[in-house]
Image 1 (tube, helix red, strand yellow):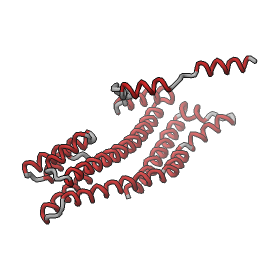
Image 2 (image 1 turned 90 degrees about the horizontal axis):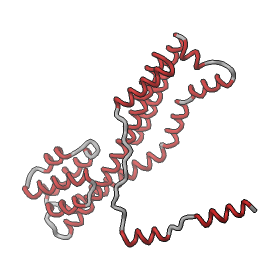
Image 3 (image 1 turned 45 degrees about the horizontal axis):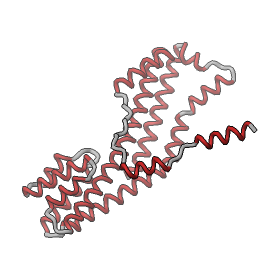
Image 4 (image 1 turned 60 degrees about the horizontal axis):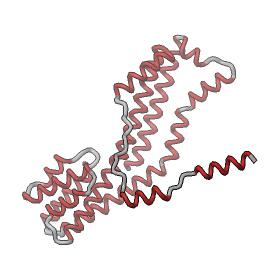
Length: 265
């Protein structure tokens, strides 16, 4: 009986989502921006690793924690750069789609590029405005793209510059040439995402293999041994701690290099 009463009270207190949905439909989307979680700097991360390593394992722990923190931060930075590259490529492809649509309606390349920059990704919008300025002044588009490009868009912008020069030099329809570049960018981004999805299993296996020494130390504690005391309280243990963490970091970096090469290929 008590369970039934509690269940009934829970159902009565269950929030109704229909009213908020109607309010959102009337008032429009929420203009408030989401708060971004601040990312610690490299200096702060290394300082935290040094302090934690010293408190846990002394001098050897400092070296081991620093190596491990640097390796993990490098892997996270590589993954973040890969995500930024895909986002920038998608933004450029969408901006090229808008640019091609404007060109096919008979707009001037400068006007079409400015229109494409209005709703483009911030990084891509800067590039579109530079293209518009170069097209309006009949300037060298390759120089403009070299100035405006970022590492995430370097290769893609080179393709756009070559396509633009090819269309101007041989009198080809600019919309068709840029549309071909846009399709190529979309296909490359789609292929990269497929490879990343297929490499999720090997990456997980590499992480599990890298953590096997930690599992071994935990098993030693469960059977009554004192591996942590040896690693943190003796000279040979400190050397073994640094050596083991070094090999672990090398394995993580090497497996990351192999998977990144597969994605890039």
